[in-house]
Image (cartoon, rainbow, N blue to C red; front, side, top):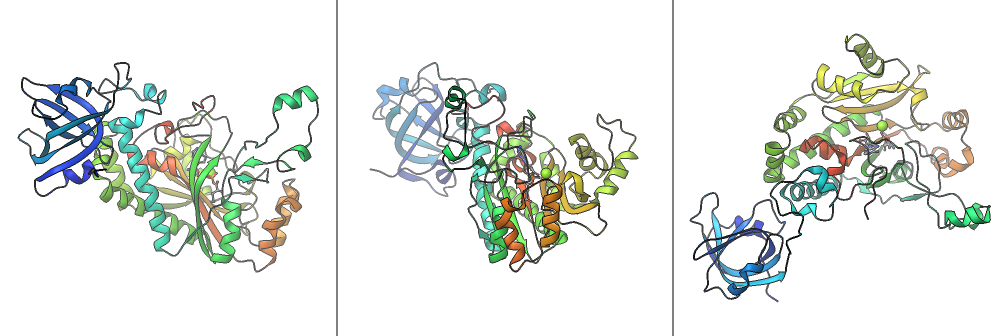
Length: 460
Ligand code: 4AD
Ligand code: MG
């Protein structure tokens, strides 16, 4: 088999090259009197490569089958293009139709609405915008690993199925092999009959598991899918999403915020140098303010503000919010956006939150009413990161579990880490889809994940 060259590589060529082979999909075909032109895309980059064919080309008699969407393989010479807007084109000597594409192909038109494309998630990656999105997603995944691996963090594969029914981060999906119809007809159910012999759920966060590794390997992270069944049909929530969760030992909330800031800046810098062409598409067609927002993230100090001060600012803002800000209540997304977009016009850490509205594992502050937690708020997406210093004191943690009505024996392994050589530690979770929305300007989470899962939406 001949080896084809990716279009991205050919477009970077510095000299003409004879006898190359490429394989890809036809975006458009134009027929002139003596020539046909194919715009080919193989997904290696945003740009197409133009192939020029005439009747001397072997296989030219099948040119009518080179319709939009069809898969083709061509051979020819890479030569300087006489046409405008491109440096190279292929003077084609061989054409092979690999897979035909009939007229009912849904991507005949050049531009389609996002909503329509969501109904064909299995094909939308063939459009410029979604091709660009998922190349960016791939490169940023790589950058996530690069950032942590370069700094001596170890990647921990935390489990997807958990035996805990509270991991402190949201509503959970059940995992079971028992058919609900069987339960309905038999009228009884015991967990002893189920696969694990106990209740099982999909994880909402890898944090509790990764903490145990933190207290052995010092610097760790997990990056994987997480699941939340809260029925919030918003443009920023998905039932299945990916989260990056680092955890650092012998560290406090300040160290945690410093790491989060360095991480976010790193990813933005990587994106801008690595994904120029794909990023330019979003700036041009999706969000004209994108470059400015990325500049802002790279050049501004991330503000650090206590929750108490944040509430003060909201109360003094003279803005009529749908939900009145109140000390002790969670920040609503309108509050988050006001702080990041209007008041500070940039990234804001809100730290030291009221104990009652935060998870059991967050470290109690000396004031007796707040915990060492932080959220990073961003223009456009609101909360991008949630994190905290963890409660490392055994008695305090046990008391907190009891106060919340949990059974400490369910958390015996978690409590063991506080019993045996406990140490201060901290970590955070960055929602990968929220980050992608932030850096591409795409305003619906369904358009930054290959196959979105949201309430009443599970295509296949
Ligand atoms: O703030 P959260 O719930 O924090 C945790 O899960 C902690 N265990 C993280 C940690 O300390 N290791 O979630 C973290 C981030 C949020 O800031 C948000 O960006 C994203 O995950 N997120 C979601 N993204 C998409 N859809 C959802 N339903 C999300 N819920 C949270
Ligand atoms: Mg949160």
